[in-house]
Amino acid sequence: MATEKTFYLETFGCQMNAHDSEKVIGTLQQEGYRQVDQEEDAGLILYNTCSIRDKAEQKVFNRLNDYKKLHKAGKRFAVLGCVAQQEGEKIFERAPYVSLVSGSASYRKLPAMLARLEAGETRITGLDDRQTDETFETEFTARQNPYRGYITIIEGCDKFCAYCVVPYTRGKERSRGSNSVLAEAQKISDLGYSEIQLLGQNVNSYRDPEGKLTFAELLAAVGQVGGIRRVRFTTSHPRDFTRDIVEAIDAYPTLCDHVHLPVQSGSARVLKQMAREYTPDWYLERVSWIKAARRPISLSTDIIVGFPGETAEDFIETMDLLAQVEYDCVFGFKYSGRPNTPALTMIDSIPDVEKAQRLQALLDRQREIQRVNYAKHLGQVMEVMVEGMNPARGQVTGRSSQNKPVNFTCSQPIAPAPGSYAQVRITATHPNSLVGEAV
Image: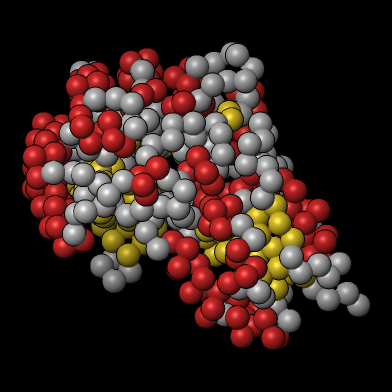
């Protein structure tokens, strides 16, 4: 009797990594593997990694070190994703019990790599396809999210921002044909999902290789797929953010009224150093399009503080932009150097304590902006998609179409299922969430 093939997969990082893991899981299951919930129960342990944040590699190696004792019990290890692409065969040197290292561009070769692993090979790599024109498409996606279906429409990045490792780990931009995207959207609807999120490192840099649809037209087309009630997209780049995206959101109620548009800095000088290829004025023009929409569109962003050479005056300009835009959500980060990036050659003379102070000042100011923004929803009735339960508080958890967390009580004896919808009257507001009751 053949030994059962089992695997455990842990995902680090962003939604694109989470969706890549869905594809990896589907592929493994197609190859006869069964997923288990604990490392100890798996024959193959995989870590799908992200290298965007500081010390990402160290977190992966720490995790590998924690479980290296399992290698003696016959377990095999694989490192996938961005850290795999970034570190390459050095992973074998630091963690010799790892048997497989593969970047995301090589996932479509997983069946062949698994066959080599099962045949006894101990150093298998999938690292040579970073510049491929192919995207990782599979019929075997095992969707893990109970309420949202993800579709990657563009892989990689051609922007080469000075601080960003993505072009070196995900490769050049390559888009997926619109027919393929729409076919997958229909499959997701047929599976019972009503929300789709389109993914890409720069999702709005999408260029249809079939030459049929612009990004805005693709948004509209996905929004018209039968059974789909919500369409989201992330992450946008200001350089490729066009007015017709706002027009599409206005024209199709299924397109969520939320845009994530990373600005990174409010200083023209710092943006130039970052190689972001736009100015604050360029960015603010796009914000003006969003604010002029017929329905209110929520706006969120990413900001890096303490980029090499950022002066106190540069930081004040970022704080001024924060006050001018009045974001609904800001993801703020201290600058940290990433491998292979141009910013590593710049003098990072800002002490970490100063970076921390600037970040705290930014987050404190943003908290007050959000307190005012969220308070505007008091008394409103909004549609909320259910995501789960908070048993400790006896609340249902969900999200508005503007991507704002909503926690609400429900008189029904059985809690609504994830993916269902409820009309909720907002009875209290906080800087990061809304509270209400189902009506």
